Image (tube, rainbow, N blue to C red):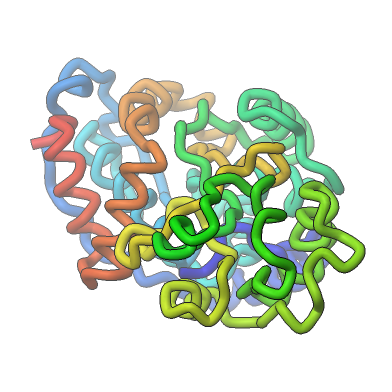
Length: 326
């Protein structure tokens, strides 16, 4: 699964991509949107009859899945939706949003604050981070961040159940209990070097200055870390907290008990022009957003990344199971 952070989405790169986006299109892989009727908590939702709404997403499983959910629900509310999910790369998706090719897409509060808005440090606290990015992105880019979901797809370290039992740890502050020679880590190259990644984590948890020998750090591609950790190539693997492979491989996520990692709660972000004309979008999507917990996303992501199901099928089945559509 491609990371939701979108570290390449700097303003400069986005500007360079603008001509390509306009000339060549977005290169999405959107398809037909399933038919459904609003039900349950959405049975009395306001109508969006005839509202033209283009929904985009980045091209990793979770973001595509969320995009499909929005398409299904908004179409069921009467909107004339356009599926522009699966845009290759965060920079392209963000630029498409800024220039109005898409009206709404799901974004992560940490990504908005640190990557798109260029701040160096996260804001502590879920609500505080959300409020900060909401205010700043509205003022700078006319984008409205709707209330965020409970889910937080942030960084974490995971261990096997065997390692948990062997070392008796469940929190990052307990990594020091592991003998120094056995403090081995599987990381992405970017996370290993960025200031708000591994170096900062070592400082926060009193492991800097030799607490983790350089030889104990192995660099992997994102997807390979999960299998490497599960197979014992390292004790600690860098993961994303809502990745379905955590469940599939029976990994245990260590608690970030000193709140080092930024909050990456997801929010549907709507162009202000669209939100002003169709404020009903928030009422329609609110009951969906409220149900998106870490546990839910772990299961749904696993259906895509482990079981090989299509995101639109997973989205429709979940919406039905929650009684939101029929």
